Length: 298
Image (cartoon, rainbow, N blue to C red; front, side, top):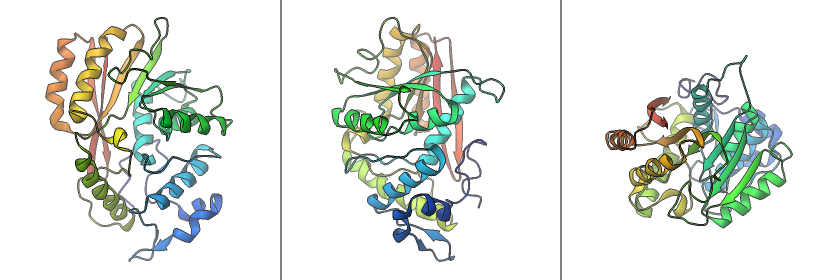
């Protein structure tokens, strides 16, 4: 299938999901797998519970995770897209099969799902600090770490005590990170987020059926604090860029996912105003949908 063939070359999720293999490694998924109009296996991507089972199976099959769960109504991330972010960040850091040094990463908004550290640890043997403003998310992420030996001693979790800050209170004066990662809240209001969730679930159904795709991003559900912040994605990233200047010596690269291309001009202007040494936009392609990573360093 061509729908995911434009994922990063190292991404394990190109093409259709291998439902027979997923069912074999995680049998509870079987009762929710049906056939689509073309007679191919699929699931109901509008059902958050079923999507969570799919994620459990994907993480077990591809990343060696033995336990993974999230609280009700928390973000159930689209694993193919999140894996793409990790692979492109690896390229940014100069990865090659002959050159894969240990990297220390800071995940801003690690969430209850812990997905970036899971993939980064499995694929590149990185270590992580995961930060979040939500104590429920931190507690759930800690349980995932505790229950998975592959994550033990590779992921440290920190609660952000001051929600108005991003790096302050998390990065210590003598710390250094090779890269920071973030998947920022996209929306200004929860109503906007709810409409987008419906479109994203529809897109995943179309991917699996082989039908023409609308230009929307793949994603599932999410707690309000994970999806929304005042001013949406643009304001969050403007704040992040402004605050990053104080920590320029503590981080090699700052990066963030960026969903809306229209925000780039304002973000570029902000980057110039804080006098970064370099910035770049890394384009990513997932079928009919384009997205990007914004990266900068001092």
